[in-house]
Amino acid sequence: MAELPMSDVLYECRDGVARITLNRPDKLNSFTAAMHGELRQAIERSQAEGARALILSGAGRAFCTGQDLAERIMPPGSPPPDLGHSIESYYKPLVLALRALPLPVIAAVNGAAAGAGANLAFACDIVLAARSAVFIQAFSKLGLGPDCGGSYFLPRLAGTARAMGLVLTADKLTGEQAEAWGLIWKCVDDEILMIEAEALAARFAQGPPLAYAAIKRSLYASPHNTLEQQLDLERDTQRTLGRSEDYREGVTAFMEKRMPAFKGK
Image (cartoon, rainbow, N blue to C red; front, side):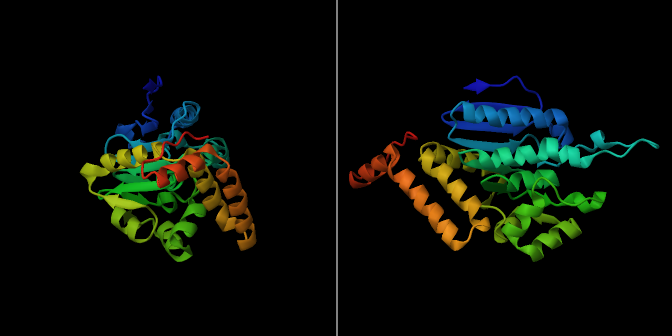
């Protein structure tokens, strides 16, 4: 097990699974600049330590409620904040770092995932939500548009009509609705949320790392490619994976009717 000396983010890595917990429960795990820094450090550490799966969760009764507005207080006469700088410095690098990780990232959403917190979950590869979870695109209530990738993820996951409705109304979307709309992988009872997340992560930790990394690259490239470009990507991906020791092991294990022992080589 490896631990980091953090306060706003908890981290550990054992049995091939990195676990990152947003740890400002009294503030519903809302983002501060300090928490952004710790979260990015934890994500980088997970890859450096050779984790083969990552679970992202929130302490207490919320997953993450977006930006801590205590950092956005504007006294009379003060200049307005540069929110573009905030996105460029914090939210954009965070989303890109999660997507670039060559391992499956599981968001385990308990309670509220609001604003950037909702879109942080959608930036992960697989989202599990408790039945008590709610996803809220709260930006319009503050006179803002979506950020943390929301304008990218929502139309692709839910379609333009539902994405527009979610962002314009800022209405709550339950975990069960999110599953029915195809926004998340699965909604489960609250008491088994982390059990499900751990089981899924353990499964990934025993799986083929090279294939998982290739799967992420291929599926995330698909919306931007033509059919021919995607077929070419599949060709190049299979050519590379077919030369790996993991593929040889997978075929051998299948023929021998045993579980494969993938090594990421």
